[in-house]
Amino acid sequence: MTFWIPRKKADPVADVYNAILHPGGIYLFGRVMALRVMSAPKPEDGKWVNFKRMASNWFTLDFPHARVEITMGDRVITVRSNKEGYFEVQDACKGPIESVEVHLPQHGYRAEVPLVGSKEQTPMVIISDVDDTLMETGSISMGKMLETTLFGNSLTRELVPGMPELISELYQGGRYPVFYVTSSPWNLANFLKRIFRRAQLPAGGLFMTNWGLTPEQWLTPSHDVHKRASIDEVASWFQGASFILFGDDSQRDPEIYANALKSYGSERVKAILIRSVSGELRANEVREDFKQLSKEHGGFAHVVKDSEEMRAHLQSRDLL
Image 1 (cartoon, one colour):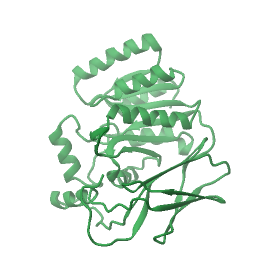
Image 2 (tube, one colour):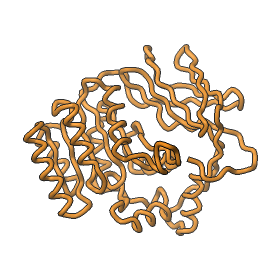
Image 3 (cartoon, helix red, strand yellow):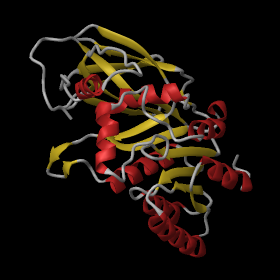
């Protein structure tokens, strides 16, 4: 989404958000846009400085219909960016490969992009929500969420205690791939990645959304549709792998994950762990739903107060 387009001429870059290697091939997703140079954040930055830096994420100059060449081993794949500058490649790459080269031949830009993941089959994949699951957002309060989002920076955002360590343990140095899902827009992808690096979260796939006004949506796409589509995408890449799903109860993670369990079965959805952030009324409602889910479909689904409870549940099933 672009709110404002700068008038001055700028050279584009290919900002690659996802470069994923999986058993079925390669998934590449990015955007051709003008290079933005922003000052590095500092913990002591004031609200106005943080607001200006955050706002700059929305003021993008996109390059629609740009020619993008991706070199994968000895092959070159050519695609065009769409009207908002986004480009995407799904390719059944066969040979061993660790990186791809992305080239904008009309603009002279060229960069090597390392791939995340492996072509090896894996028995398990971790999928985690971001807001109020990994990162404190305060999404149950609009005022708190706006203050946190607009007036903080990547050095001041608080991580949920213990979650980076738990995700890293499950990751096992790359043995089990990790994917992060959020309804936040792609404009904030690099901001989010900086937070992940600071928290030493494992590098993984990222699913975000494209905000905008279209006949299909009003500003933001459906949280349910986006998150379920993300799970289905990963499931198609890692056929036969089981899943551990992390979320919270501030939105509809419990319902979305429960429906995934009903579709894929308890052999594939090994665990659903929901952090309680919305109070006891909502937590008890989800607990009752999970009890009924377990009776009808099996599965391992729990509402917890913190990462230590998550850890205990995973250990009880030999998943950690």
